[in-house]
Length: 338
Image (cartoon, rainbow, N blue to C red; front, side, top):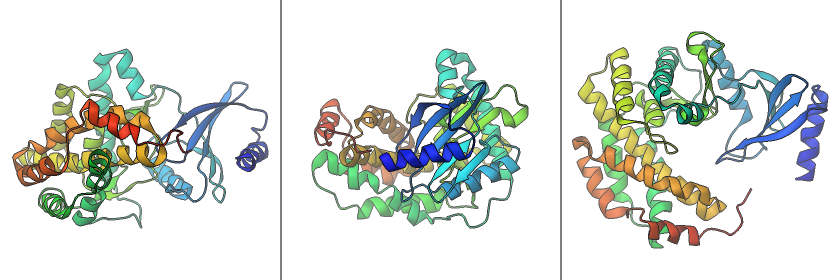
């Protein structure tokens, strides 16, 4: 850690920020951490993304430049040392959608409409070359975190997931396996900022997009509207789904099945990821979010198109009662792993 601190200090000195005031800004479920730098009236953000982790700063830079080329507000890259995983970024401020809606719930529809329009613009452009393009079976395997980690944490055994994989693969092939578009994957209120000094779609600041890949049109929409960290009002969710479907000329009934399928896949994966973050990393702060994700899963599985998957999940995955969540927490390492 001392060597890493020296690398960051040297990087800042090389790029004129050696005397900046440094304050912790954020961390997330990955190994990345952020600091806000202040030097006189100027500010910037330091991204510390140590080499060897799951996230690649090269991918972050490439995607940031693609988004900015579309007229969207990803942070500008002020300096970079990709070998060491250090970036100096434009500071887009603190007006994260989550905070703005908490302060004024009446703004939810306005902000989410701007986010939906940003998605539509993003998906209308050709995606960058060379992005991962997973099959329906690959997406189903990604949701295998639910039996492998959530069910395991709840029961102490890893169940046979053969029927789970088959049912989810079939649902994805049937309802969510069409033409691919660029998806950012973590498109939700804590990764979106409001930039009122800019015009049009540039008013939506974008964060956490380095895992962008090819995927289905509804995936980022579901990520936005079925947020693990906050409840989106049912009225806003319905209006935004209709807005997206109308603009993309999708059949409403087919698009509803599309979104339910993607929502189920995403919720299943998140259940497993949150359990794993606790069991492996000692990150218990994600456990209180599990009931919300479970509710979203049940909402999606209620769609008639997912009856088979619902039956499998009912047999495989127990509900996150308070006692069950306590049982999972009791298995976590006492000290979070950095």
